[in-house]
Image 1 (cartoon, helix red, strand yellow):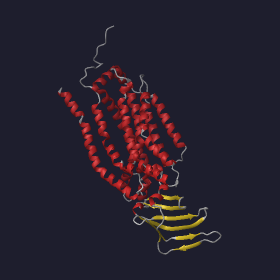
Image 2 (cartoon, helix red, strand yellow):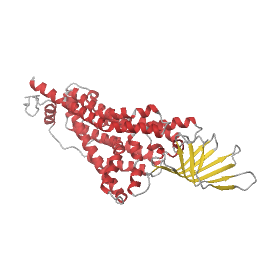
Image 3 (cartoon, helix red, strand yellow):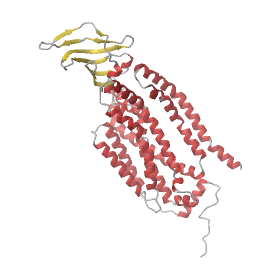
Image 4 (cartoon, helix red, strand yellow):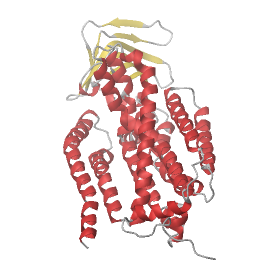
Length: 464
């Protein structure tokens, strides 16, 4: 009785420790996230309020997800905890190995860019810490697949799975901890993909530019069309923190008449917008006026040109220059809501596709569990041959999805992940060594309950 109470007490220490760690993490990062949301509404007044206000709550949920998982583990039975430990250990090894191999490959590719920084080690640390949500989001499904195939293959080859079935449980009930693991990782993927992973991947260029001593920009060569007022904006670059008042660079505004002929063109090296009186100020402007059947008239202004009746704002102008793959669900929702109010200043299809992708991506973890679990279980002494089929289908689908796109950095990013999975697959396909199945059944019962007397090695053979 005392041993049972002590084991139960020690079992619940894990969720308590995880709860304390989650609370400490929330106290550390939530104030900064709340301040970032407030700054978002100041810099972008047309942002979607509900989705951005959910950001601190989603981040707090991510901090306490391990606590929920630890509580479910503590409330589970002996067999459930045994399967969870077997899978969790292998999953941690797979994830750590893939992250380390990917880190070495990516560092070898970018070491030339880092070498131009005055503080090389600090830049490398900041670069990979900032990018960690995107890397974790990429490698989680592959780590889950490899861990499932190896752990289930090990349990099957050691006859432990047969022992579990003979104890009276169905295959669905035995694999329930793995399904919970898939749902848990799906929630982590959903939380990271909500805002932080896309933003982290979009910050890579800024960190590299800062390391090389170049100015950071939020968008370059942006084209914005205002069909209501027949104005076409061309902006060379949006500097960092432009929403706080920094001037836009290389601005050109073309105005047309109703018959689509040129009316005027304004070119300026810099343009700034005053938030208080909603005025545009153009520095070193050159204004061109066009009249039918007459030569254009060019006018230089020594003083800044101030225009008061233009309705465009900087956060409207930058929207066509924001890449959809670097926007989270709140920013995508704001973009789509803003584009519906104006007559399609940019094609909304990529942004709508990315919005659905952000929601659908977490389901890949659950689908991986549902596919890999039945194919990873076998009742003969062979390698995880069914896993080869799963890996082939997964890698083939990924290759087909990327073949229609150009060879960009994202394609290289996914190619490296697939190369890591292929390397790990060679290890998984090796047949497991022969062992005495009686010893494995006894080891299984001893692992889930040390007080269990069932040891097949000590059991005498019955006389015929």
